[in-house]
Image (tube, rainbow, N blue to C red; front, top):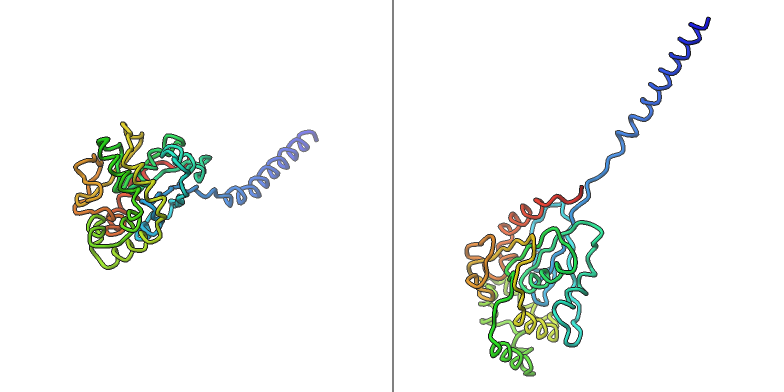
Length: 257
């Protein structure tokens, strides 16, 4: 009798265990954790906005965000300004920075405040270019003139040439960007960029630069990859080529464990 009871208990236990497995299996199979996207913060050029990045075709696994420029405080340093911009970044998640032109300079300074997994520069500088005191004072003197803002914000043959705007579409874009740029910000940024004295590249930095960049000539920088014929606005004019490089570099970083 005890043997029959023992066998019955064993059978019930086995059936109960099997039933539990059968019930729990579909639930465990149904729970799928979606992979988290890598946050990538883009910082545009001098006074521009995300319009310069609209031609890029980025991997959908990237969560693209755009840093918004804010008005600089009176006599604010570049480092203090970068610290204020860093407040737009969610540092609780892994992230990367992509900086274009002056945005690349700011990205390097932001990297000193927060800890991006990678900093990618496009048409920018990784360290400060030495300028004489005379040249720096000359910049300040020119920018103090009431005529400097309208001159700097005007779209003409000179600005088109230096920015590499050689198509009607690029000229139209540049004209809009210059028109929308705040004069006070433009003056402040030019002075800060001219006096930028960073000595060393930030860690995990990748620099893309064009051979035809006239605003920041390639001879004064040391890029990691060179775009033949790329001008200062190559992120827009040669977007397909830049997109492939960005997708490869940005996705090479393991986003979330």
